[in-house]
Length: 372
Image (cartoon, rainbow, N blue to C red):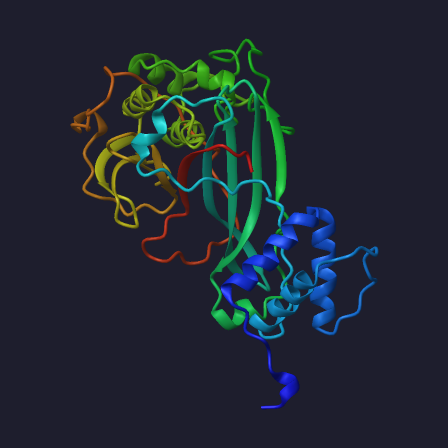
């Protein structure tokens, strides 16, 4: 070993003293600039020097020590804290029904596979949508949408050589009371051939959620006849349309528990709607809401009626007519009624094969103090 390659090994006391000096006489902004310059200089990278200022010798040695510890690889990190990461899912879905305190947010995450055609082949890219709703839902909601980079339908080598990628830069939107730019919300408008004034079930906001009562009969009537399309012709909704209404409001993570149970039960009263007990594609116990006309499926947590997953490819279990199913009524309110989620995705793009046990969309919910 050459003598000039020998590095001094600092004792704990010496390192503590150096760090103490660092924090005692260097402000954060200036200290970061100096640290960055010192590290880059130690690595042999030139950079314009920072403004002159006397530094304790031990801080300069700390910079060199860092270079030694990481084997010559310069890693410069900011000491400033960024916006908090979304909270991890709560210990259980039941924990999410407590009242929020000022400064807390209800957080919902949706991971969905979106179809694309790449070089003539059907593939799917994974999209992540995050939503933060403040303690007062009438406040400003924050929604972030981005691609995760995950692709299915290609081999590992094909993914590595993929020349096309969807835009990965997150799109952030703010919506007062949950009304985001671009939402079609002619709420309250009416036309002679509509059954009811327009209700924005498919882009639900705080006002729509507040209008949902924990009564099965009332919700069932709304799931069947509320106007959700400006081209409405007065007919009752199909099971798929009703399922979309239910999905859209449940994926917010904002509905009270008694309303969720009422909505689940109300879905049974839509023609072509079925409810049974079973499992999610990845094996979790679930209450399953089925739309016979399309095969679309919602999976709810049996104990809380929180949304777990959605899928377009149904493997039919032994189905019992929804009205004949003895649903789990633990913590549930008296019988109530219905609503649905996002619009039915109808596309001519062929889909890449989906792995067994991997639903098209999965959901997670949490409570956090940061809005992303």
